[in-house]
Image 1: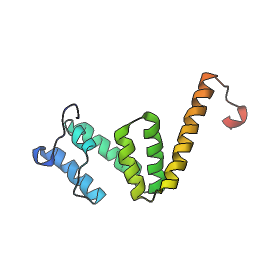
Image 2: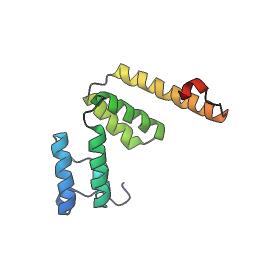
Image 3: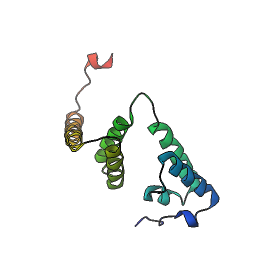
Length: 131
């Protein structure tokens, strides 16, 4: 259960409802997920986080699937079960296949292993990587 509970639309103040309405319009859904309902106890953080996420995840040089795969990889590395579930669903919606997920997990696992080894051995960065 969320520390402060989940703030449903009907119980939300107008400033929170405004953010909820934007989330639903942007995502073309009638559903507000639990992450936003938990953040809604702090309307300033809710709005700031939603605006930042909306900007970062909007169309750009990277396509939607690539952005979701990156988000999923970071969520796995940070061990956030909620974000793993949320962004796995979003990546599937954007076209991720089971084979892509398996390959992504292989890359994430390998990157985490080699990152720890390089850090543990305090490997100096090659000069050619700096240019």
